[in-house]
Length: 288
Length: 124
Image 1 (cartoon, rainbow over the protein chains, first blue to last red):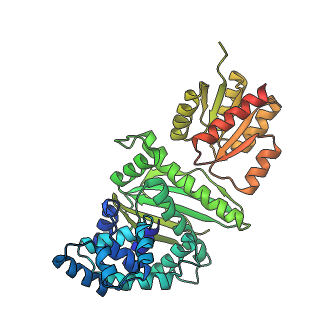
Image 2 (image 1 turned 180 degrees about the horizontal axis):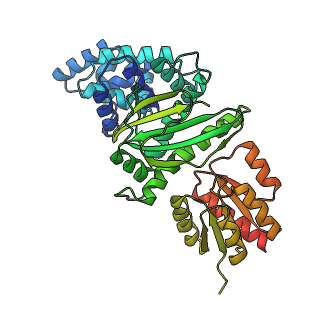
Image 3 (image 1 turned 120 degrees about the vertical axis):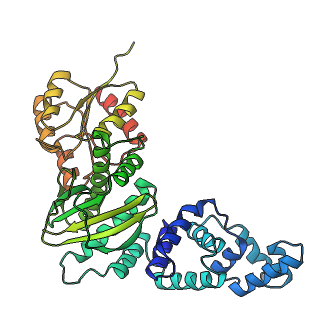
């Protein structure tokens, strides 16, 4: 989860192209985070000091840690802390950016610092932090009475994509161009408030969603594919209803529908484009 | 040889029925299926299962209405609600009507094993 938020932050800031972020996300698990990046993240070393050690390594046959100790850049205690550091997904992502040459160590140092400061990661949960990032990026007009609900819903939908589809979704933008020939998966929630939620996707994308959600090998848009795509939305919306129930709002879920061709409901529709490693999904939300 | 436990699954989702059938058959159960809130009532009268796993949001009749009907047919029916809508209202209503458990989707295998054991315990 963490790397996805960091990636979204980098994207929001316009620091890298979406294709670069996507590529780094896909490759991050094969990357080992090096001591230099760990030390920068901890604030033990500056990017300049790490680069100085790298230069020394070209002349001296010693490891990074040994040179850092010799030069007095790191204490033994600090080195032990770094060597004991557990795997950290957002640092894997950061290391990948450096390895691919998309960022220098200095740029990574700056963006990590900003990310921690702006996100106040120690104070906010993953979900609320993600919501703030979505708010910063999308800027849905405040006069819409459901605006907070939409941010909560998008945040939950993205987390559901990570959990159930094993992908790293990236919010692209609010979109106004919906292709009515795409597949359309929809479900309404009514009760104390009304929310119609749906997503549209090309057939190949919907098939991939069906395969990933069901864990089954599905090759064509048959009954199981249609059902699996619908169940993904149904289970996601069920989790959203529980969250609202915990806030004192009771909603009933209506049966989900999966059709070819969109038929949007409600007085105002917000469509948000979400990019994944297998293609684009448009998430559409509407109030009563 | 002990008779297998007869379990009725009621859910409009083909995927859910397929996955849950696989889980239950691994546990040695004999499985029957219903696709909606009307079918499950007919299937209950016909097969008299030892336990039912039932969704709430279903076509024709929802799981809460179906639970009421099944309890009228058999007050001892052992019904486990298996739903994506585990809100406080649904949970309370199902338990008041006599459901023995409420499992929130997505479920995991250990929840199904526990539910089957609960059905066996209530039976003996």
